[in-house]
Image (cartoon, rainbow, N blue to C red; front, side, top):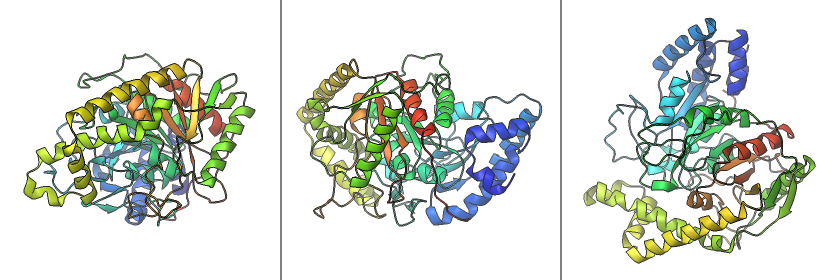
Length: 467
């Protein structure tokens, strides 16, 4: 088994190799460590590589596979973790120059569950400061780049996680998603990324963004995403707002297809610019789903969703202002300037503004609940644009002004519905386009199933970034 084969293999493929003894966890981890050393300086996706501990964990996994006693299909599979997620022994950086960088004394639930499954937690991924924006650069770590084109952003805020998986630095990564931060980089990097029903994946410590925030898997395949969800969704008593536990194997029924499902297609959420390449990719994906037996029809988004952008910003900036209370005023100049500006806007909001936004959010959620009594799924572009240049927080619009309406993800953080992004076929641009698939609460299995159906009907590629 060549080094290239091991670094391009997905988690399910690695598991099969371990089972057949065609490759070992130590060989896979060694290959990925070598690739990380060669490739990471170009993309800046990893803030820390814990090589010694990773190789020790890989040896333990190798012994379990040798004895025929793996803990799970993810035993021995390398995984990287976004720096906003607490990982025992690693610094709690949050992408900020202001944190004290003390090593965490325990794992967050998602990390703990993956370790219990035997996964090799080997590296920490970059994030913008406190995960506040949809691209990945920070005062602490600089710019993270997209493996498809190093001049372009991988998106954010889980951009390091997306870039790492796309570049072959391990087949699995864990991100966080408070407004699209798993789905945005997954779409820009050609990956499958899941924001599950709120509370399905336990989270601790609580995010400053409250019930907007989720922890989620980022993978190359729908099967790998389901395998991660199997482990990450296991209950944890530290989570203050868990979803009702369900005894479900998300790989069961994954291949059942979409025949007979009623799917609503929303191409645009309001008067926004939609890149023709994105529209073409989503149109082609909708046609494929129809060919697979789904009933796909254009629909309108609930009218209450028209205000989603403003409602989200009020929630988001109101949470960010807490940073101004956590750190003394004389240190505020060390924040990312855009973060500081957003926090100050949030600080100026009135109580009435926030309460009105909370009311609008509830109305929006109810409207979407009612829509899902008529449709099994809703599909849309994950993002309205292709990956754009690094070093800027927003893409440019057709008029040259900043385009603030480039993402369709935050709406479903407000409503808490499960939403997955999955790649469409590559278009003439050669850059990935993501299709967002959304379902009713607690139908995480259904968005995974639709993603798997589309994946099985397409050929998918990943960027070639020589070591």
